[in-house]
Amino acid sequence: MNRYDFRGTTVSERDVSLGKILSVPGETGAKYAWDTGAAIGRYLEGLKAGKILGIRCRDCDRTVVPPRAFCEKCFGEAVETVQLPDTGTVNTFSLCYVTWDVQRLQHPMIPAVVDIDGTNPRAGILHLLDRVHPDEVRIGMRVQAVWKAPDQREGAITDIMYFRPLPT
Ligand SMILES: [Zn+2]
Image 1 (cartoon, rainbow, N blue to C red):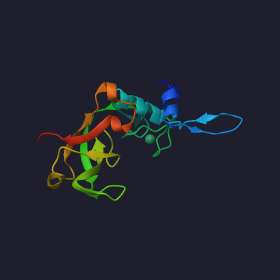
Image 2: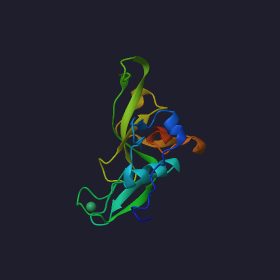
Image 3: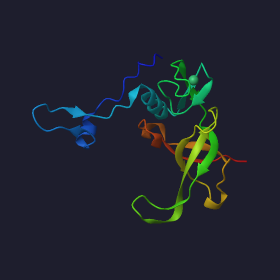
Image 4: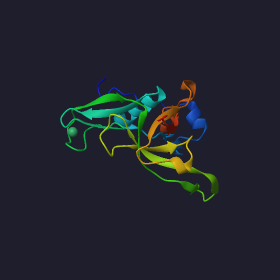
């Protein structure tokens, strides 16, 4: 796929009716939506298909996720999209007993940076861990993505509901 082939996400009437589109009142009637760009657009389209996509730089053999339009290490454009497994290793995590709006939680949310298998070290993605007791979470723990059902996916990082521990 040419890196400029991604079509983007079309603004739908549903998005407008739900108020997800910023409308500018007045003469133009212009409507705007956030554009994901070619690289992240490809990533989101992959998530909708149940795939984690990254890029591999042919010049410095570096693989990262999510995709970038170019390699920010060597600034080369010789990047190719690669499909990665949905497994990885916990790089770091936190136990959060308070929500973003200061509500106390009985069971903590566990945000974590997961280094996806096949990527270079310290190039992980931030997501949530679940189906693990807080006392058992460890750096280095092997985990796998738990996906929404295909017909529930929207092309968003939340198409992965959480990562759960792999059996040891
Ligand atoms: Zn590079």
